[in-house]
Length: 160
Image (cartoon, rainbow, N blue to C red; front, side, top):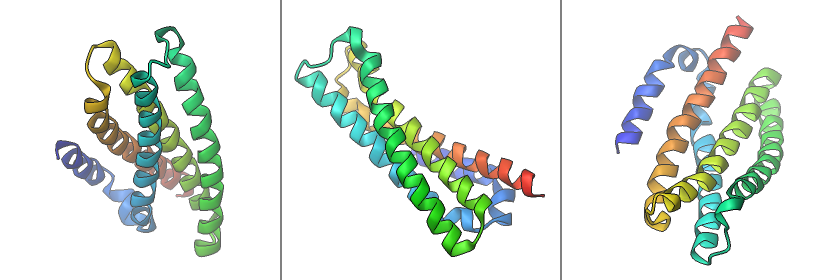
């Protein structure tokens, strides 16, 4: 709950871009949901590999890098599809690029968090199967929203 309260405070700090470009709000669930799915998938893969003893502590960066590669591919494909949707719906290339870049960024961040948090928890002798979910969900929501609204602020300053 604390994480979602922080999201409300975060959104209130970006009132100007949201008020100026109301359509930004429409895509918050899409960005947060997609990042959540990517973070959860990365976390599940890593927790599974830890449980089966398939991850060597010396190869953790390789695992994180592999999840980031998957996220990059997903981010590019989904970002381009979102760009096309925005362009066809709003006829706004800049807004499409903003959403494409935001989606790619939040998906990459989510994959990083999803793959690294269980590894860090495992290293700290905390069961990653129990503790990963809340850390990944809250961090994806807060940082993902901050990324999106920061990009929106920059976009707004460029079109003025």
